Image (cartoon, rainbow, N blue to C red; front, top):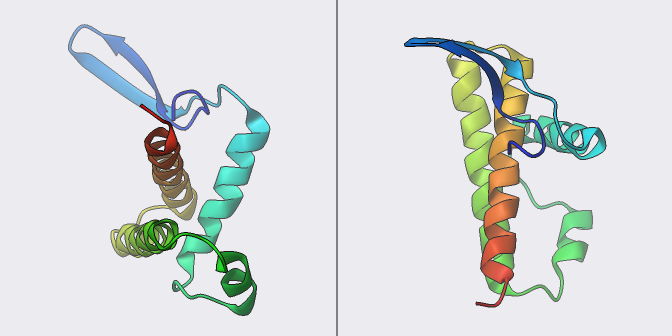
Length: 112
């Protein structure tokens, strides 16, 4: 998350902490793609025709993980909307959670 600049900036002095906007370090293109992807979680999770085609032949564990992630991210988006957070703040939070899922999936896929 920090590598892609999806963490808040911080200005600290002693016990005083001030958090700002995201740091915007790292790869700008990847960060932009994650933000664009995060916007899709405002819609209700569903499996359309194109997604069903892409899923054919995939292991059931992968599909189950993707469904759980889609469900959780959509729920989180709606929860933050319910708390009256700004839509851009919500999208960055969802992008950060999304990259967490990607990182966890890649970490588990690596042989020990």
